[in-house]
Image (cartoon, rainbow, N blue to C red; front, side, top):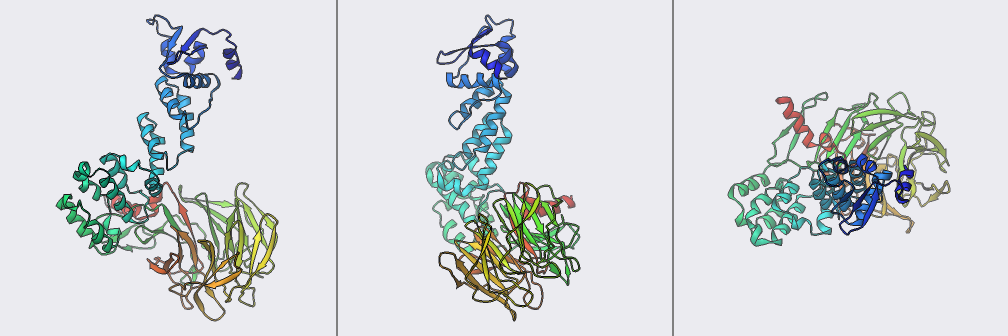
Length: 572
């Protein structure tokens, strides 16, 4: 309580003195310090001590002042300058509450510049949880950590190996691991040559281009110092065929991998969830997850009880919201939420209107449901969901009704283009400003498109594929508000409509859809220059929705690592 600190500051009833290392004295009350500190409790209650009145502590006065302040008030000023000194002092004096306060502060201030120091420091003082969180942050942001400082180069061999061999090391390409290894060895070549085998063993060479392996790793000046068994293993791995997945059955949790990789893929930081859709003439509740490191799709058996297609999916704070949709007979206004950490589904507040073929985006803490079809008419009405309050409210309607349109967010504005009004496939486009709650028409698409996807990428809005009223498209247009034109972009490899797309590790990732004849499972990605194929889904489907979920603490259960562990545990 504040009154205790007032009594101390006014030097009333004090019965002891604490002296700092710089000879500053603090008059205190033994009972107050003993209640907060194991050390002071032991000192003040020790009958063999010559004087329990005066206690010397080996900390400077500014730190002692903070320690005493905490003992009296339950709080004190912690900042980046004093946190480490305070933690060391609190640990030595056994002030548990202060240790927890400092750890909370450090946790909220972890960044690429201090994550390694925080990890090492917290290990020293047995703050295991915070040490683990700082290390996980480093793994998640390894490239930034490596590029922005020299701490990695000063790590010991064991520390470097422990980091680079970790399954959760977040690197988009294994070439980055070799660059780190190469730089670490060259930092002190004479001393570190003997560790070349240990460091190169951390590189999962089967996930890098063969040409890079031949031109860089095998030509490294220290390759002669690598043990022959390690070189043999790397050569075998680089020549291994790609991993192939076999799902035994739709209801089975087992996946067979052929061949078993010599080096397993790392656990991806980003997981793509593909939810629902239209498959084999029916809506589905199937979920698949995509592992970009393994380039494989895996079945996820944490399905919702309800099948739906032509719905929206939005991910906010690692919660996946499924909005509206159609099950073959009913048009939904319901919203379901999936928590991939706990694997649980929950019901959220319903929309005011039923909507399938709905366009959804997230902006400013709201999920917007735009247009769609309610079973009777195409809609121009728009509503938004307050995530914190679990409540929908209507906002300004669009200028034109449309379903099956594409929508995206750019510069805190919502853009929507294309779609179908019940009679015609549309070229019209609009932009919504949430600050003034007004929709404004913008320049039209060059081609009519329904079942189109809009996505923001590298400073442009891309309109991908769709149906023009005659055929499915693979053509692409892109728009920038400053230019007020839609330019022709690089076409996709496969024509498709009613597909889904997301941003995945700085590329546009596209999957599924309808090619004019059948639903398709095909995936491809665009890196700003060209489109490239990726592994297809296990299920052929259109009218699906996908999203990218980043930084899941249990990402392994949705990726290769989790499926392999599941298969092994079932065999044993």
